Length: 200
Image (cartoon, rainbow, N blue to C red; front, top):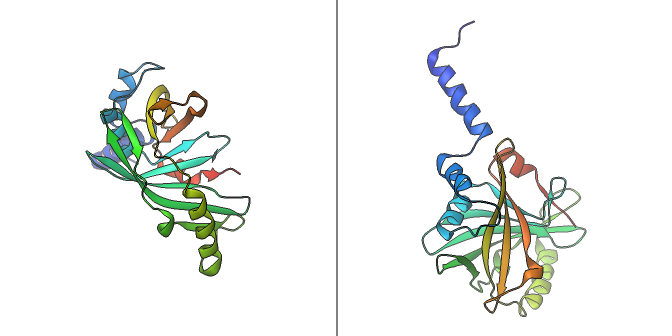
């Protein structure tokens, strides 16, 4: 059976999307060598174009992850998720500020009120008094948080799996904390990103 031309073109576009990056993302990949600092404008594009940033990925699990919800000129809004303990996963919406064409910095936003929690065993939502108690515990710990900044160094790309690997570098009081350098796998495939889970 012959496939109509329009259908064939749609299949070609779908296949291209399934096995490659958009043109700007590919341009970023082509531009950087491993170990090179990525300009913030390019980081912002990766945030907006990607599905999920998975930190310290191992066998389909993340230590924590970011999903970028809105990326603008001055900063980005994103959902952070991680395992809070062996029984509970949490997620909350936070905001970072872009600085000096290089960094995304924490703003001190109080994200505890918008925090959500689910049970790791079955994915059921936690609410009521149990959620209120969890928020209270986390709010007490947050009082000691510093407002840190981060930049990103290019590592590699995998076109088949639609991932880019970066190193996130953390700055506390403008000092690079080398012991906090963290590998992050940036996922562009929605199905693969959705399948990731959190590791405790």
